[in-house]
Image 1 (cartoon, rainbow, N blue to C red):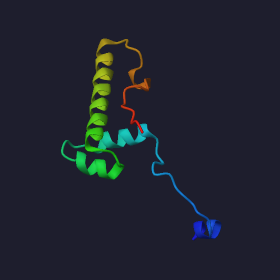
Image 2: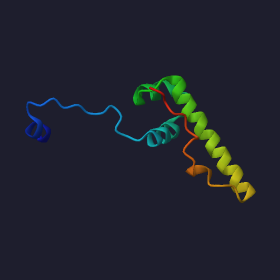
Image 3: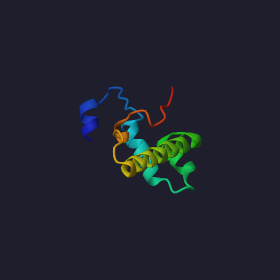
Image 4: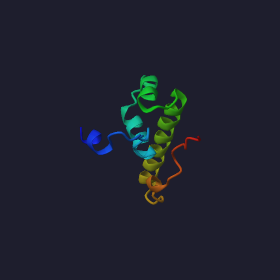
Length: 89
C-alpha cells in the first residue's frame, strides 16, 4: 500500500539483482550441496555451469587460504577481488 500511495500512476521498475555479486556467490557456495546446481541456478538466475564456476572458484579460494595459514605468511588472499568469475553481459 505504501508503494501504491507514493507511486500511484507512475511506471516503476526494480532492478532484477539487488544484491552484490560477491554476496550472491557466497550464498550459492553456502547452499551448494553437490547435487543442487540446477535449483540454485533457477533461484539466482544463473546458468548451471555458472553456478559450478562460482563453487569451484570459492573452493580454490578456501584452499589457498588454508595453504597460507599452514605456511604462515601469505598475503591476504581473501581480500583479492579477482577470485570469483565475472559474468559478462
